[in-house]
Image 1 (tube, rainbow, N blue to C red):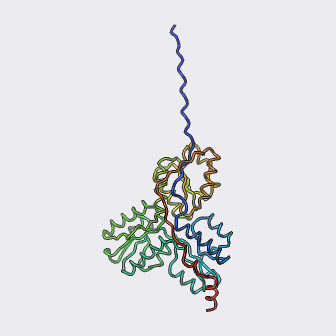
Image 2 (cartoon, rainbow, N blue to C red):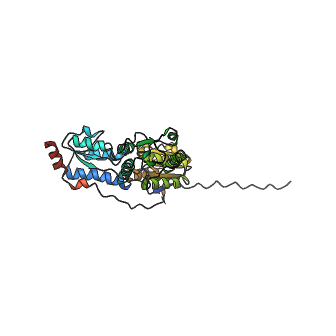
Image 3 (cartoon, rainbow, N blue to C red):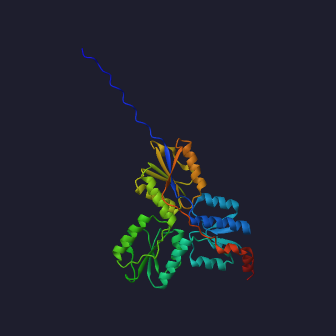
Length: 337
């Protein structure tokens, strides 16, 4: 009888350590940082209340924090009692809003992001040269409303490639495109390509309209999506750039990507079978919220944090010039007029 030999048991596959891939850059861009500091400085210098037309930036936590310090957020400048200070948000406003504030006898602080102001100036210049301006952006977004207000008779909105078919212009040789600063780079260029096919003489803006921070955060998300099974973006639902980051993660290959305001919104079921979590945040998100998500993940075994750096950011913007004036005194004088 032949001798039986034991077959060695196969070794279990080694389990991969759980890790977090943390994007850099992430969070606050220069325009958001400037706008938030501007509200804080105004409250410091002039005392509460300081009114802010619309959310200063699209982030729930930031708005709630500033409200606790004495900021009052309103939908329209017309809601602010005469003799007060009103600040315009980072997204920019139309000239008609400045006029409303003057009629309402309000002192104003313009916290519009300088990169949005650049798009406004482009719109005015091309309108003065009698171009048809095709503004690529999302209908109803505050930035789009503000830019359109600079040249309403010359601008028409193009909300994605599917809108191109209905675009009509007066002179195909005098057409230029501009864009909302917080869009997906890839989606914007898809729209531009469709517009160029319809209008071969379409002119591009003299410099890139999509802001550097939006592009950098999308590039970092693309890198994360190639390495992580799950991507979490910290940001608010009404934040266009945060929403686009989730879209970009999915398009770049992430099996799942979610947007959350706070760590408490993460569903533990998302982590089932996941060893690598990619983490980033939108351009209007303070890093304290990202740190809370990191802590939440650490408590669930994702203690290894690896930084994925795709760009350096050093740009800063000076604070609105209006903060150098005595706006309370100016507001009081306006009421006397």
